[in-house]
Length: 243
Image (cartoon, rainbow, N blue to C red):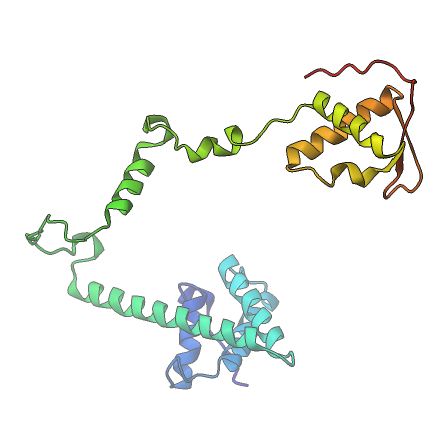
């Protein structure tokens, strides 16, 4: 491989060095074998370090990036390496184009601080031409004014889930449970919920059952999945339930 004998101060940065290495190949950036350029770049940085020269951090950062690409390229599946190589090509092309533009600006002799053109008057049409559905405009208005300024009454549907449901008292379910024991002094736990018409009623039955067990009006025994509930006649305390 050709020995590289450039001095670091010649280059404005790692991209400048890479472009110089590519130009020595006398091919376009799209055709140059990036892996060869990586090898030359790493040899260059290594030579500088061996000569105890001060290597800028941006050159070392690019070296680490190129080593990573080279490592990925050695793997059996190296799609990521190819992606990173194409990304590097794109950055080199952008850097080259910026250098070309900068060179043209310097050639004019005006410099960056003095490059301008006279302002041009632009005729703007303020007419809004987009067409929106009324419902979209309404939603945009609601979103713009915010919740605190809407001052709109909530729809009836917002309360339907509260006022439309029947409230079942726990005390009433104590009577229902006691009534069921008329068909036998021992009943299956699940049987008390078979005719429940709502979740509220099922919760009330369960709470009533707990109250009766606490007051020793009924006893629980048997299978934990569906135990037997036995009515204790003439026993237990008075059931007090806070409604």
